[in-house]
Image: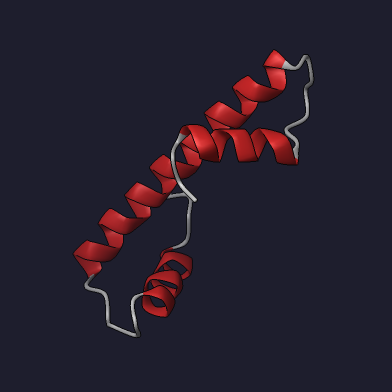
Length: 72
C-alpha cells in the first residue's frame, strides 16, 4: 500500500496535465514514481544535513538535494 494518497497525485496530474483524465494503472505508476522521488530527495537532504553536522533538514538541504537529483 502506498503512503501517498492517490487523490493528491491524481489532482496534481490533472492540474498539470491540461485537465486530462488519468487511468487507474497510470495513477498507480505515478504514485510509485512520486514516492520514489520523495524518498530519494529525503535521503539526499539527510546526507546534506549530516555533512553539515546537523540533525535538522533545512531549506538549503532540500535545494542541494533537488540540484543533485536534477529537478527544478
